[in-house]
Each structure stands twice: as C-alpha cells, then as structure tokens.
Image (cartoon, rainbow, N blue to C red):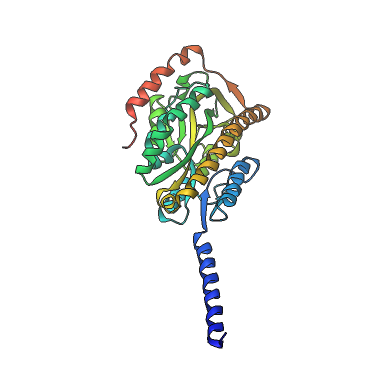
Length: 317
C-alpha cells in the first residue's frame, strides 16, 4: 500500500468517526421543564419518566426539571417558553387562559362537590378537546393531572356563604374566572401575586384565599387564615405541556416514547395527589386549623352559583 493510500484511509476513517459523533451530538435534545413541584418524594414520578425516556431514546431526549418554581412565576415561565429558553412547563389555574382556555371549564365551582371520580371522569372525557385547544395556542399536551380539590381559607370563620360578602379575597392577577366567582358572592376580588400573598394576609390586604390543601400549607396561609371551609369550591387540574415548536422538532418514534412514559408519570401524579391531599388535611387539623361545613341551606344554592358563573365567564376561542 502506498503512503498516499495509507493517509487517505486514515483520513476517511477519521471522517466517518467525526460524522457519526456529530450526528449523535446533534440528535441529543435537552428539554427543560419548569414546575412549582418541589424536588422531593413527589418528584419521583417525573424523575423516573426522564430516566426511562433517556434510556429508550438512547440519550437522544433528555428531560431536565426546574423544580420548586426556580424558573419564576407561571407568567415568567410562559414568557420563557415563548422565547424558546425553556421548552415546557407544568401549569394549573389562571395560566390556562393562555394555554388552553377551554380547560378552565373544569374549574367552574360547585360542579363536582367532593366526588373525585366524577371530577376525573370529566377530565378524561374532555382531555382530547383540551389538548386540541392547546395546539391552537402553540402548545402540546403531555397529559392532565390532578392538583386537588380547592378549599377556602379565611382569617375569620365562614359560617354561611353570606360571610364572603365584602371580604377581600385573593385572586390570581388577570384571572377572569376567579373574579367572576368572587363577584357572585359579592366579595372583593384582590389581585396579588402568589409570592406576595402571605405578606398580604399579614398586613390586612387579604382576608380570604382559596387553593388545594397542600398549597395552603406550602404558602403558609394557614398561619394567618386558620379557618377553612371543608366543602370543596372546585377541582384543580394541571397540564404538562411542551411548546408545539419543540414537539414538532422531535422525531415521530421519540414522540411515541415520550408520550408512553409521560402517561405513566401522569398516572403516578394522580395517585400521589390523593395521598398528598389526605396528608395535607390531616396536617392542617394538627396545626389547629378550624374546619367548618356549609349549612345545608347554603349547599342548595351552589347549583345556582355554578350556573351564574358559567353565564358570566366564557373561555377565549
């Protein structure tokens, strides 16, 4: 073999190795997901999902979670997704007005009572329509998961619905549905960022707020508003989403892998939601939070409240 041929073979071999390596590097995609979920036991389902996807895609798709709200508020995260600096997030509540407005139908108050099976059946029935609506707004659904029943906490006891009249009640900034509910009870909708809500209770800007039991603990609302109505106001559902642009850039085989393990993770999140709620309610009781039920006379009025809120609030199309 001539010296020139020897050099050519070495050059060719190196070129092949370089091309294969380049393809591997180029194929790897890191998908950052922002979530308010803390990095503790509750995150196990998502960590397992990420590991399984990385294994099945041979390292092509890597999920990285930004835990505990470290990426900022939901509004800030949404801006980062639109800018492409973060690929997706786990959202609930008023942010759905931007991602999938029709999904907020599930949060209209007093339609499920405390019947979790009825609430979950409603989510399952509407999941396809919610996901389709999400696509119109530039997002792709990886599944809908339970956040939990929503409860009212208050500085003073709430013995009847009339006690909400004139009360300063927390609402997400820009949340039209929340505002419609509070207006129906003749309360005073008070828009305050969730990160400032604890201070607002302390300085008197807030008298009441609503959220899942686990949130009432995490936000320490119970320390300033130690009265709680144990009859749920509504049922909160979260959405696990990617930007549609990110989804379209993933190969079809890898999409199937992601959807398979995301479905498993969502199922595990639903299971842990029940445990989290039960443990949170028990914890609130042990922290001397007074829990009251609405009188039967008030419960008979809830269907009318539900109907009135539906008539005043319409999702964006």
